[in-house]
Structures are given as structure tokens and as C-alpha cells.
Image 1 (spheres, helix red, strand yellow):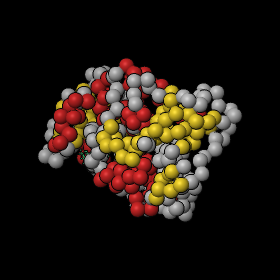
Image 2 (cartoon, protein in one colour):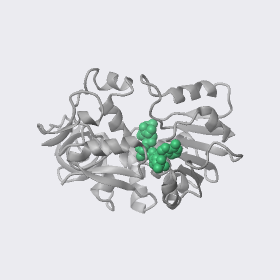
Image 3 (cartoon, protein in one colour):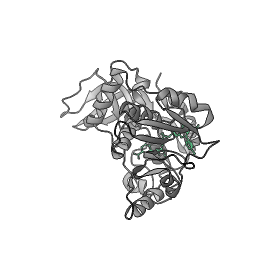
Image 4 (cartoon, helix red, strand yellow):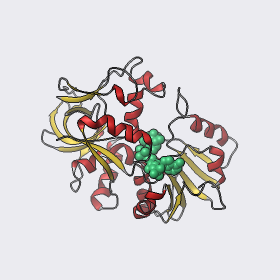
Length: 321
Ligand SMILES: NC(=O)c1ccc[n+]([C@@H]2O[C@H](COP(=O)([O-])OP(=O)(O)OC[C@H]3O[C@@H](n4cnc5c(N)ncnc54)[C@H](OP(=O)(O)O)[C@@H]3O)[C@@H](O)[C@H]2O)c1
């Protein structure tokens, strides 16, 4: 099968389109014929092996699985001996190990039947980013009527966070660049701040919660616009240190010891329960995935370079022809 593989950590230049053996399922795994695969920052971290903590889990000198790609949507090709929830021919979405390939292995527990109203490309951009948005809003314990500031509101995670916060009944202020203002409004933001013209951490307005996805603003700056008992949820920000990559998150925990403000740093772990929650919203039309750009498998390096620039509008996807 064709797959995007890497033999060493590094920039998108290390990625190669190669012919490799099709994976075989372990007992609790499914082989999915991939129709579409989402492009998210997790892929970038695994490709670069950065921060270094990634290498402890993925392989010290090179990634133990050379095939990149996490999110997927496709059709079940083969099932392991213990798999009961899926059978060949089922349309699924979720995460797997190496989805930038014609076939990928996925744990049964990380998949769900695809929402009936979505195409494969739309379904493939849901799992990691929407689960992360959900985790962030839960960590903020956001309630109806509260105010929330969301940075990176027009990106892969932000486009879900705005919609989900709105559905929870919160009053959303989205932070994005000029070209995305109308888009972020259309997602459900009551207010938008163009960060290229206005500092979202300046001014008198405060928020019950901040979901911080982009811009790597200092914790002290974000606290300035956080209500006295509000919650700052730091989800994003590359460049947080070579070793752990979580400089701001760690600092926020220290600051939080002596503060009534709360600081959270959740991780969006894909699981069937959250996928089911999201699927119900997708099928009800209260949540809509935004596909940014579509790339063929051979163009994964181009897609990842574009992602790394950090100005995505929704989320890009690799589609198999
Ligand atoms: N904790 C977790 O489990 C988890 C899971 C997934 C992702 N993440 C992290 O979450 C972050 C966002 O991921 P993503 O997939 O949403 O990235 P993305 O698709 O690149 O979105 C980032 C968005 O932020 C905007 N932006 C850039 N600079 C900004 C600034 N200074 N202020 C406000 N907005 C700015 C970008 O467009 P414009 O500049 O045009 O507005 C873009 O729309 C990443 O750091 C990623 O690593 C964390």
C-alpha cells in the first residue's frame, strides 16, 4: 500500500511517499481502508519528535511506527479476533496509528460508526480537534450565560470550541485575524477581536473563562482579562520549551497556588464516549466541521508545512483517490 513514512525525526522534508506492507490487526484492532485523514498539530509533533518528551513515548532515535497520521475516516477492511463492535464494510471515524496511508490500524475503542450525514473528509477532521475543544470547555466548567474568550477561534480546534461554547449557552468572544472575523461570527461568536489590530488582553472587559489556543500570550496578560474566580484553560501554543513544550502551562500551575483564578491544561484524548457526544451533535446539525483544504496523499508534506504556519481556517484533510 502507499503510505507517508519517515525514517528520522525532522521537518516535513523527512516525509516520503512509499510502498509498504499493509498492516495486520492485533486482537482488539481494526484495519481501516482510509478515505480521509485529518491534519493536526499532533502529527507535526510526532514528525518533529518535539518536544523531546514525545520521543520517550514514540522512539528515542526514530518513530517506532514510521507512518504518520492520526485522525481518520474510512471503511473497515478487516477486524481482529476480539473485535465485536465493527465488521468489514462499516463506515467509521476516529483515530488510528498511521492514517496517512491507504490502510491504517486502529484500536476498536478509538472508533465509532461515521455520522450518517457527513462525508469522509468532514468526519476525518472531527476526532482530535473536536475532542480537544470539548475537553477545554469541560475543564473551564463553562455554564450557560457565562462569557468566554477563545483565542485561535478560526482554527482546527477553535472552530469547534466556538460552536460548542455557543451551544452550551455561553457568550463567546473569538480572537482571530482580519480575514476570519466573519467566519468566526458565523460559527456563533457574539463578539470578535482582530488580534492584528487590537490586543485581546487589554481593555476593561473580563471573561469567566478563557480557552487559549493560539498566540502563546503570557499567563499574566491573559489573567488581566480573566474574572477574579475565572478559569484559564491553556490548550495550545507551540514553542513552549524543547523538553516538555509546556512552559506556560507549568507556570500557570505555579501562579494558581496563590490565586482564586483557576488554571487548567487538559489533553484531548479521543474516546468513544466523547465521539458519541460529538456524533449526536453533528447529526443534529448543532456542530459542523470546517474543512480548510483538501490534499492528496502525496502532498502531506505541503499540508503539514501549511499547518505549521499557524493560520488555518478550520482544518485541512488528506483525501485518498
Ligand atoms: N492539549 C491538547 O490536547 C491539544 C490537542 C490538539 C491541539 N492542541 C494545540 O492547540 C493549538 C491550536 O491547534 P489548532 O489545530 O486549532 O491549530 P490551527 O488550526 O493552526 O489554528 C490556530 C488558529 O489560531 C489563529 N492565530 C494565529 N496566531 C494567533 C494569535 N496571535 N492570536 C489569536 N489567534 C491566532 C490562526 O489563524 P489567524 O492567525 O488567521 O487568526 C489559526 O486559525 C495548537 O497549539 C495545538 O498544538 C492541543
